[in-house]
Length: 203
Image (cartoon, rainbow, N blue to C red; front, side, top):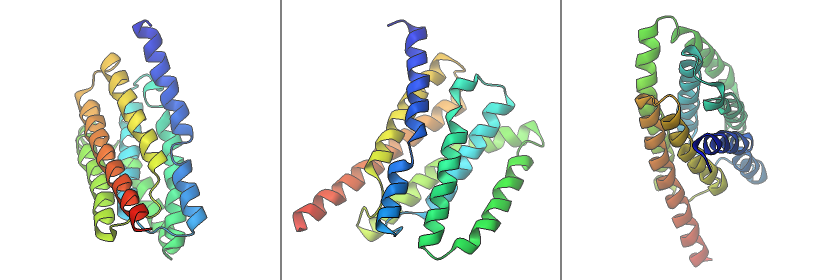
């Protein structure tokens, strides 16, 4: 398989995976009618990280196939956020969160240096979102409604995006972000599977 074909496969498979990336997580929340084990703070930080990446890549006119999944994931994250707010009794906070994200979208692109700085910080934001989820798991000692399928898909898409970034833009900032998020997603998945295994032994 040639490099060009492999790049196409990586781009398209990433897009297809992202079309359903958050669906297992959403179904888990709906089925349980609970957000137990799920970190609201982590979701908010993840959403912020995705918005920054989308703004950055569109601003610099990166090839569309290298970031086309971001609008899809953002929509899914917004839906998840509404589910979590509903099940935690905090739906009234949806409007303030919307105002913050919309204003942030415009503010970070007012100056190039602001956008570049924010993109560099997005790695820390994304890492913080994953660490928040880990903390939530450690505190509850229960995988709750955290979807292993969604985490597995996220691990796959991070892996393919590391490859596509190397083959196209070779942007070090974007590359580091994907590597960090990949490592933390693997850690979260391992934690979820560990707690589920322990729960089965107890049963």
